[in-house]
Image (cartoon, rainbow, N blue to C red; front, side, top):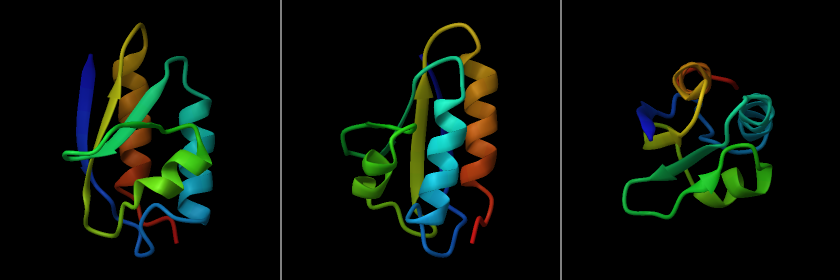
Length: 87
């Protein structure tokens, strides 16, 4: 399993518009991507509801994970988005 640790750049965290953009990008990947905060259970990054319940705020570190063919590239794409201010 591949993982990426990324700091949330959006000022509102992963909420509303950033969550929608992130879910759309994650759902378009060829592998299932999960996201979690340290010590929490992972949620599917392609689920807006899952992302909203994550409670990731600006400056929080999140851990993205995926497994399978194309996981590395998929994680790179989603990590880049999380590290961007999407507000």
